[in-house]
Image 1 (cartoon, rainbow, N blue to C red):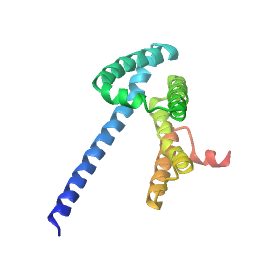
Image 2 (cartoon, one colour):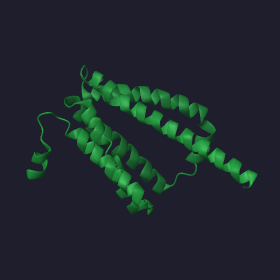
Image 3 (cartoon, rainbow, N blue to C red):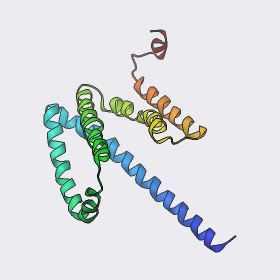
Image 4 (tube, one colour):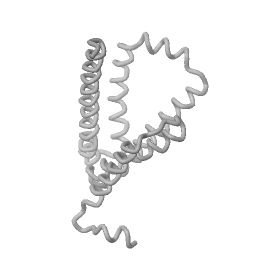
Length: 170
């Protein structure tokens, strides 16, 4: 085997392991988010928790922006009207509205249940991705998404008083 190709494959495997580790770290951080948010929601109102969290997020963004100011200034000049529309759509619909609904639902329900339901997002990502970006997912990827949805359903029905048969009968 070509030594250069062999080295590339090793680097590729290492990079994949790093990406997987980082993705699992993200999953862990998102996993503790509902629990910490629920602690706050038990003490404060939804509007207050959103403001408190976003104020802290804003401070973190300012620090992040300072360290990345050159890249940001270069990219600001490249934003056109289409890009601005997507930016505002993501900020208002995907971030603000989704978080607002998330906090209202989380306030009155178990954090594990809401977290599991929110984690069903890959099915919607798959559909929207196909419609807008025309990216295709191999059958094993589709099976993975279906398993995620099945797992979310198992978690959602994890109530001792709830019978799965009732879901299909009603």
